[in-house]
Length: 486
Ligand SMILES: Nc1nc2c(ncn2[C@@H]2O[C@H](COP(=O)(O)OP(=O)(O)OP(=O)(O)O)[C@@H](O)[C@H]2O)c(=O)[nH]1
Ligand SMILES: *[C@@H]1O[C@H](CO)[C@@H](O)[C@H](O)[C@H]1NC(C)=O
Ligand SMILES: *[C@@H]1O[C@H](CO)[C@@H](O)[C@H](O)[C@H]1NC(C)=O
Ligand SMILES: *[C@@H]1O[C@H](CO)[C@@H](O)[C@H](O)[C@H]1NC(C)=O
Image (tube, rainbow, N blue to C red; front, side):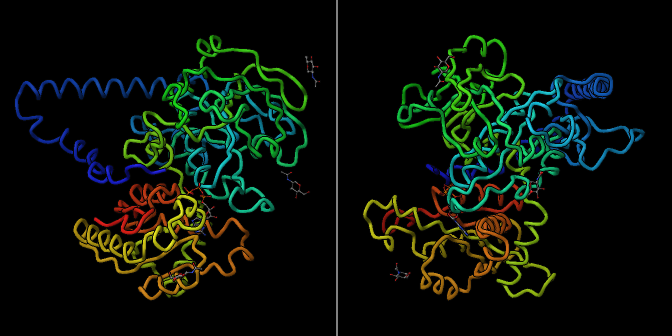
């Protein structure tokens, strides 16, 4: 939940600025510096040749390496020589790291020369997206292939079936951008299998909080037919020792448990599994942790900050599936009144999070607690102005998404000249997941974004607009009358 969202705006383009300066012409002015630069260039070229040589003569432990189709964080240095045969469309796909198609027991499908990592989800959809981002990032720093379970319908409704990760996010594109494998559970274990797999996992939850004396619960575990024996992680993994009001751990404290020395030193008697009453130490082939939402590199709730490694190395490569993107485009076209297949004009996207956020109003009536439309309109003007100043573009169209149900409020939105996707038939046509999925895509497509302070759905939309559209954002403060005045 956002604490200080404004602190990131000024630093946003700092990285690009520094990068431009580092290779500026002054660097080559003095001859001493020129010699240094020449030597450096020679060393770099030699290292690159060595890297190419090593790449095609040895295979690193863990993941099989081939060339990604698009640039990702691990793909900058080495490029395929033109003589190499053309790579397949999905070189890091399931067949590169599994024995074959999904099996009844997941173990029958794991390869002995590959190491894997997994975890489960247990919150609202946006939090679960962030949890999977963390899992994939932990996979990167431990050289393990992440296996992603489905999204669970926590806020969608218990009767709604889970939706596969790959039905929302473009997994082949993610793999290519990362330059490494990412799997879904449905690739590994047959979705219909009733075989119960025993496995030992790390219990992080009991090491970071003091209210619940059990590992984090998740319906994913039942959906996957896993019988888990948990080993409580050591207390030192907690980011703020003994502090009951936070429950974060750092990526690297969890990564330490993935390697033999710290793993061995941290083994304690495991909790017997609930079904088979079996005690197992944490699995070394398929490493698993009960819950990875509260994971950061340096400070709690980090995803909103510009330096967040989980966002920069994973989240920004998690693009929507082309099908979902196309569906959202159709909703925007109909909202704005653009003919089918006509070009969509640039727009500002808004996310107003209401509904259960009322619980944080502490008795203040919602009309005074939530920000009024006038405050949101002021933020929209600021974003329009920033886009005008930085790109020269005038963005007049505004598209509102929200969980608000008050029809009068929606009428006031349209009186401002703002557009809204019409979700009257969305659930009937596509299923209960789709209103929120389509709205999340629309939010990410804005040339600029105005969101709701402390909403993770707004925070991640702001990051997408920043990374994908290079667009500015503002998060509207709320909680008391005039909370967003500035
Ligand atoms: N259709 C639609 N639904 C929304 C919107 N904002 C929130 N919701 C609904 O509210 C639920 C809460 O959001 P989640 O992403 O599940 O919850 P969360 O992960 O706790 O995120 P935040 O509560 O925003 O911090 C969603 O699952 C939707 O059902 C929106 O803009 N459009
Ligand atoms: C699971 O069962 C359903 C219904 O019998 C079937 O349609 C589906 O293809 C099966 N899925 C897999 C992965 O075998
Ligand atoms: C579980 O196993 C332990 C030791 O193997 C045994 O003592 C205990 O009675 C078993 N519990 C149940 C419920 O079967
Ligand atoms: C709906 O919204 C309008 C205007 O925003 C407000 O006056 C009205 O009280 C709201 N109704 C309810 C039931 O909250």
